Every structure is written in structure tokens, then in C-alpha cells.
Length: 489
Image 1 (tube, rainbow, N blue to C red):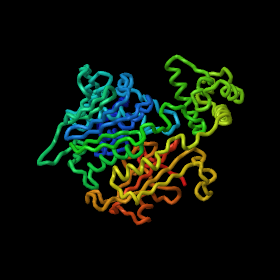
Image 2: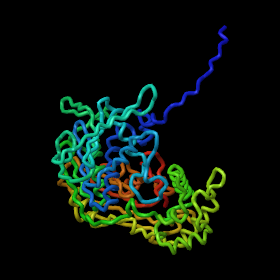
Image 3: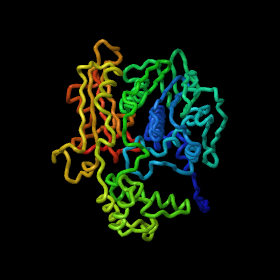
Image 4: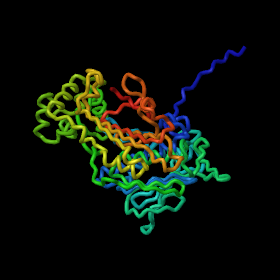
């Protein structure tokens, strides 16, 4: 009998592996491998729009796809080298969205970090190419099979001044003097006219027939054009080109760089933000004043208002670190500070969040999609409108936060392409298009958007287009991939 006892060793595994397998990336993104091309497009368009808006640039974005690449290019300021470096450091999570409550797009937080490993995960020859600020980065990222740590190769070269931005291997060119171009490239696989992308054997056909992946890809891009009146979007799907021109280049919305409103926070949200600031300051060897913290909020940039808040909360010359008691934040004092900040500021009206508007949606439905002009209908509902008690319970805090819900409907022209004669739903939130319909459940009924449309006799094979968009500073989702919204009332 063998009496030898095994003394197990406790091994430490790097968390960097969370980004280097199909299983882990599915968890990180919330989407199956076959949907990763859509994740790439959504996250990069979100980033491009945010970058342009933060620098008051009217966005122009090109999305190009062919047998071996997807490329998204913009006319923004160019991705900073520091942002790119942070996205390639898999030991940390860097995000300018963390902790804030605001009506921003996407907000996955680690979007770029999940995209860079994808090419090598699906194809040994896969790579990411980033062109910005006069530099061309050819990036490959893999995991060392022994140490299980990230191995990053970033081959950097200068872009000749005469060279235009390259949009994938199909040689499409844009005369952009600035901006960012990000391409994901892999080995081409085409046999007898059938094109396969290496995303779980995804079969891609050039023609976008109903229900095809090509149609999903195109409609995701088109959703961004629908929900952003200031955006000009160039779409090139295997040489089939279509442009959606901005209807209102001067359109305004709440910007990613705008201060957030304290009225969008409850105590737990403010504690999370304070914790993020305190940790950031510790790492930097700093300790900011409460006064400096609250000046970043909407309506509290003036010294007089800040003084009133600090007097009410008894926090004059107090530092953020003093809000720590033992090993936790002092919730009682933070609740007092939250109340004082709310009393001395005004809530934000829903119109300031941004309204897409009837004119833009009408132009998109009629000119962009070919809907019958007389069939177009538009509706808007905001938090300022009177709401029946039966719609919102007294304890529904969402009813006290500004929001705007817009819907549009149109009937497709009978003389159009038969392939387009099916129900098309465009749904999104905070000016970002969704990969899947996020309105899966309304209120207590448990029924979602598609069920409601079926009740109105517009089933899946009816030739109609329906759009639904919600802007809300405190969106809640049921899943990691942010594909299902929690919608009260």
C-alpha cells in the first residue's frame, strides 16, 4: 500500500489570461465568437464618435470589410500613444468611464483591451494595425503558454506624409489629414465564391440577404447613422458602398467630456466614484480636497456654490482621505455630502441629454431606407411629461432621472428590393447602436419590443422599419455584453 501523501502546491495564474482564449473573451465581451466582428465594429465606432465629440469635430467614419479585414477609420484627433499603451497593458484595467454616471456610449470600459487579442485567438496570423498621429503600429498579442502572461509585439513605423490612410487590403483610401484607422486582419479563406471569416467558421457572403450576417453587419453600422444626426458614415461591404450623410452637423448632445450631474447619483454610485479618486490619488502620491472633487460636477464649478455645499456638509478644507473610516468609506458623511450637492444644484432637463429629432429620423427612414414618406410616424416621450402612477411606482428612482425615449416607424416601398421586405428593427441607447435588441422586457409585463410589435400585427416578415432609442444617464443591463436593458414602466 502506497502511504505517500501528495502535498499540493498552490499555483498562481496570471489574470492576463482573461484575454487570451475564446472562452475568456466570450466572458469579457458577453458575445459568442461568431459575433466578435460586430463587437469590433460597435466598440470602435463608439470610441471614434466619443473622440470626435470631445474635440468638437463633426464625425466622419468609414467602415470597410473584405475577405481578410475589418477597418474603422475616423477624422478625430488620433488615438493618443498613452491610450494605446494602456490598452496593451493586460495587468491593469484603464478606463475614463469608470465610476462616472453619465449618458455615455458603450461604457464597457475595457473595449480596446478585449479587441487586441482577438486576431491571434481566431487566426495564428491575425494582427491589428493602428494608424494615428503619423505612426503605424502593427500589433500582435499572444499569451506565453508557460508563464501565461501577455506577449505584445508593437512594430512601429512612420507613415510617409504623402500616404493616405489605408483602409484594409482592398485599397480604399480617405483623404483624412488626421484621425485614427484601426484594422483587424486575418488570413483570407475563399472557396468557390464562399468567404469564411475565422470567427467560429463564420460564413460571409457579399450580398446582404435578410437574416444573413452581412445584413446584421450593415444594419449595426446603419444604426449609428440613425442615432447620430451629426455623423457621416461611409459603409463599404465587399465593394458595395453606401454613404449616410449627416443631416445636422451642428447637432448637440451631452458630451463625454461634460461634467456629470450629482442628481444622477445615489450614495452607492458616489461612493464608487470617491473610491476610484482616492485610489488614483494614492497611486500618484496625492490627496485632493473635497472642494476640488465637487467642482467637477455640473453646477458646482463656481466657488460660491461650492462654499455653500461645504458649509452644509461641514467639509471645508477636508481631504478625500478623511472620508475613510477604518477600512471603508464613511457612508453617513457621504450621504450628507450627496444631499448638500443636490440641494444646491438644479436637475438636468432631458432635452440637454440630446434629442435625435423627427427631421433626422424622417430623412433616414425615407431617403436612407426607402420607406414610403406618408407612412412615417415619430413619437417622443421624456421624463418631464406627466406620468401616471400606474406607469411608475413611487419607489421607481428612474422616474426622477432625465430620460428621452424616441420611436420611429415606416413602411417599406413595395417596389423595393424583395430581399429587404421583412421587419427591420433598429434599437439603441445613449446614441450607440445595439448588436441585439436591448429592449427585451418592459416593466412588469416581461414582454419586450418584438412581442409588442407582434401584438400590433407587424411580425417578423412584415415590410416595416421600426426604430427605438433611449437616452438615460444611468442605464442598467442584465448581462456583461450590455445586450439587454432593464426598462421600468
